Image 1 (cartoon, rainbow, N blue to C red):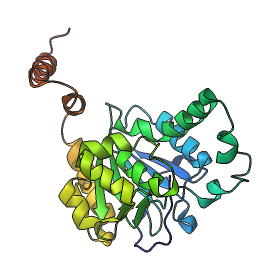
Image 2: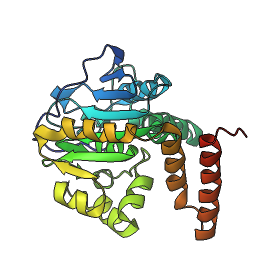
Image 3: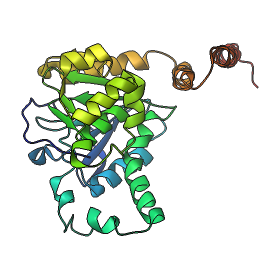
Image 4: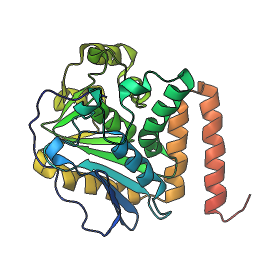
Length: 277
């Protein structure tokens, strides 16, 4: 949940121009047919995050109409997200919110429930009926890094700077980012990235699997739109089945995965043939 010392970068471009479905607490959701765009709208603070923004992100997930197949996540201004707002580390915390210091005084169950509530902002992006794309420019630090990791795919600008600063602050990555990070880069590299808190820049991010594509900052929005169009070209049910098949592969044995492939393909063949269950 960390934030950077300072930040530079380039704008990630404009929103779709659709009428917002949601626009509150630093989060705007717009929907254009099959594509939804979730935008962090606090560029003056490098889209730093707080509990109100997390609640708005969770609400955005609940507000998606059934027509949506692709969700694009982006941040206004020069940085995707600089991580947790530093005000969280003050005794006062945020107005109307229990400070982190106050939360620490609660019972184990109360503290667990509070963190679980924060995590809801980061968990819906991998729903089986959606494909999510993070368009990442500038800083993606701590909570910002974990938010980018929450998505299925990441398209990044050449100026991107990923870093996981939690451990440096005496904390751990607790916003559902550790699982996808290990899945993408392996346990040893994930450990090194988290424990050192160093920056991972665009070229390395692409090389180690954090980024699916690296483009100049001015081409970020266009590249994401092109990727979204490519994802929409395949039939929705086939996309959903393939995503579920790949998501479960890591937890299955080779033979279990082959069985899952057979079952999924049987469903697809029957669907294409118009044969019901």
